[in-house]
Length: 148
Image (cartoon, rainbow, N blue to C red; front, side, top):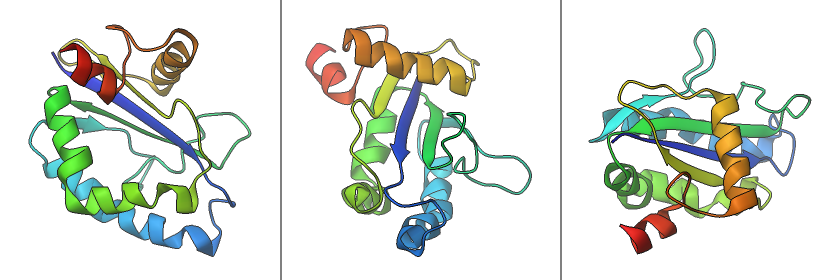
């Protein structure tokens, strides 16, 4: 069954601050690699020419809170991209350079074939994970590895 993933972050400095430019410059390349990755189905992008979701205001009044929402064939294909694709790993390793620590910041859940989750649905899953902990309904990579 396909898997949806949401990861969220809040910039330490305003999004447009030059300190975030390395992250912003990496997005197109890493997103293109995700789009071409085995198992990739869909990802959220902004309006018009936007090729990422950084301009989407997922939380009203918080322009520095960003979301990454995508759908993959299965958890294994998402995990392979997230943790084995070199450029993505490089950006992931520098996460603390740009973003405040948040917990949870990642939620995974199964979706029906052809379903495209909304940001509202995804944030609800993240809140459920934070409130109730991981389960078959919403989980983390760690929970998935321990319970498959």
